[in-house]
Length: 253
Ligand code: CTP
Ligand code: MG
Image (tube, rainbow, N blue to C red):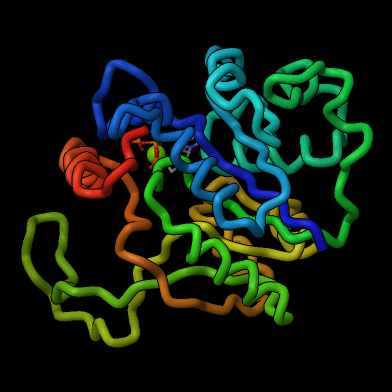
């Protein structure tokens, strides 16, 4: 089974508040999106990547990712739409995505869907561009779990802080049992058939990809997450990523 990674990167990054869309902001001198894609490819278990970026950034993303087995498409107004656009582009399901940019980075548009279209039985990873430091080992672990027969797999971490229920006025109504709670990361891994079913049934309020699978009543399994797979959301997160890269020799190149 081949492995295709879908990378939603079409958000604006409101909470980061940078001058560029978040995926294009450099961290350690390299755009967040490029780090996320190279991390996936570095795992050795990902065959192809489909990236969804803001429509006006398609050409810029193609240049940044030239020479890699990557296709760039225009994303949508929310994350679900961006992932859906990328899923359609995997097999060139409609001409529409190609008009929007279903082109392999750095090659001729006509080559994009011809000789390496994966079969319907492939594995799909969905990975936020906003997690540029997710370790390749995490990607490999998620893919291994899907290969072992799990149809939906998410990396999770236990919560470190105590969690409380609070009302709109800021008053505490109780302490939640955190031992049963987990923070969920990406990459999340799925068999293509299951993810397609989940997206076909997705409502407008969908949050993460595994949530759509849960909504079908299908099981979702977990593997241990990794602290480095944190999501760059705020300026603090970006600073943390910069600091982590600064102490890793060669990471800024
Ligand atoms: N994303 C996307 N398309 C959208 C919105 C989000 O592809 N319309 C992607 C983001 O680019 C990011 C991932 O989904 O890689 C997780 O979203 P988030 O961290 O919320 O990024 P933004 O939406 O860009 O940030 P913010 O919510 O602060 O604006
Ligand atoms: Mg967002």
